[in-house]
Image (tube, rainbow, N blue to C red):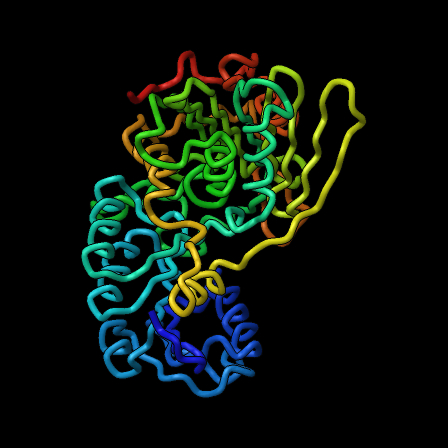
Length: 387
């Protein structure tokens, strides 16, 4: 463990797209004196405007060479999903600790190769599920364990987002299940709304691979893509709780994603992007609270310098990766008939909308039901199941 007070050197692999968020966050931590951006790994170097207020970090398209020359202590990996495992292992072999963007890998085998490899290298790895840095998560778990809402029945999560057709053209792997024979699995549940899945599992106390008993999936698509854009999954945990997540990228109106913890005597609703919690139970008025959040890169720095416990180590995403694997192994998403979606052209790009999906996603969270059980006219006859 380092006891030095000097900022830790950081390299960022993937600084465009979502990587811009990481670049801004690194700048914030630079202002606190915690890190210094030593290098950027991109196929096309960032220009001066993109590097504004960042100084002049070394740039390279070769992460291994960049780590060797900068001797960075931390690598932030925000690159296409199929590259995650190899780049995380490249960093680990150089002795760099890793913040790895979600989903950590496109298959359970690749996840295990990554997790086992970084552990063998003796470096720390944090998986970028920012919602799991919310202080609301352990607070909700405490309320459940203390019986505030009675016996835990299950957790339902809902994600109704709007994505136009340009979203699926943002990169060659966008909306793909496979690309050039390599798994990608870029579906609604595994990438854009992956936080809904990981958060729901965490609230149910089921984060590790062995916490999952079996999984049912229903995968559909309105867009002309390979992956799912309207889907749901139900996990039976080893403790007997049900975790259901319903998601769509074809919402009528974009809404804040949330999870509902169901108990025999009440419920807890968690809007995880807002860190907002609503506790409702018999004999009490509703109680709403807003919680703080620990940034995951800041937590990783604290782990390296002061031994802080990691918020999201790889093993605590094993259950999520079991869901990814179930989706990977499931039959390809079923295209919705044209009668069940419409095209809206009011924005800069057209987008496809599934009428009624917003209410259906909410009903799933409320009832823990799958689309096929809620009467959706386009639903699959029976969910695919993985044990």
